[in-house]
Length: 116
Length: 115
View (tube, rainbow over the protein chains, first blue to last red):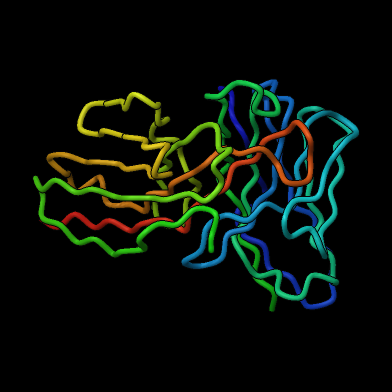
């Protein structure tokens, strides 16, 4: 079955630790995205990648880092510099960089990160 | 002003009711529009795209008014299973890139259908 997977589903971190969230897709999508969602709020874009070995900052990139070494994978590292990392993290992918008007994004199941 | 604004609700309606959600967007260059559904503690899932002429999918009807920068979603004969948060999503040209577009999400409208 084609889809997007994220792991782990729940993650607990101590303050001062870096953690890496996994995102894998087998949809052959070129573009991948990371969002953060806080309670009662919409999704905010952290980073996105339109093609392998390239990525761009979104609206709230500070304290996060990404890599895109393979088309299928777009891991997100939450660093100790992120002041308020507790949130629901969602990875998404799309066919391309929204060249078509109807292109949209498809989401993985998310990782819920809690900083203790 | 937020780029995409929705009434947060909650909307509590009885089964069988008709309910309408509204959404406004600020970027007049926005190109395409979507409604996503998000269940509690789950990922958003595409419900339907919104086309200029309006479109219908079963009990769901989406409409777009470009002049007023307004999008709506109508749910008829609501079911218990329709209970969720509905996200209005706009696809606009990215602020940081010349060619890529990004999705901008509203905060969502919460719907609870009561038996």
